[in-house]
Length: 188
Image (cartoon, rainbow, N blue to C red; front, top):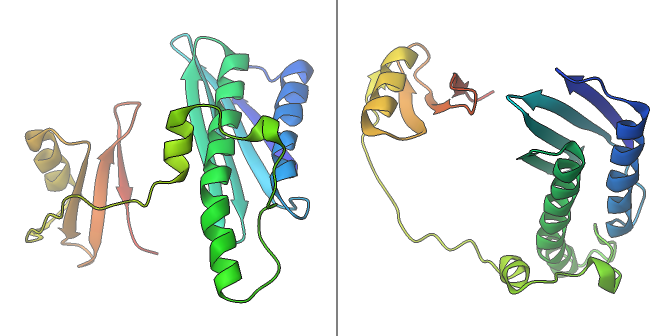
């Protein structure tokens, strides 16, 4: 896997690069073929917190994890753990789909070494989630501009708000970012 490692408000030393490479390349044991995609790793420090963001785009799947702690190496370890949980969670569902379609080739390796298997009851429960929808909300989308949507979101105390954008008549989402600023999600 090719990794693009960059730092924000931190110098990425050779030791950090080697550690990230070593940890993330352990993920390749989960795949039938070596990963050819380019992964992006961002290391940053903000107000004493060390944040690690990893994005690995693949065909039909994007692996993404983020962690924040007081220790950069601890954040890297936590991100790798999150990515492993994502892979294990998707592995069963994707392989089941391929088998049902009669395709013998699987996306993930069937038998992962025991050391990589879930260790806690919570992790075992996470793999068996069926993503049950427990509540459905319906509401009328009032056409409004982005600024009004942000005001509405703040008034109801949510961290996101779905609205009909008056400028393009599309359904958009505004959301509050961790840095206190706002984001807008639009359809391509």
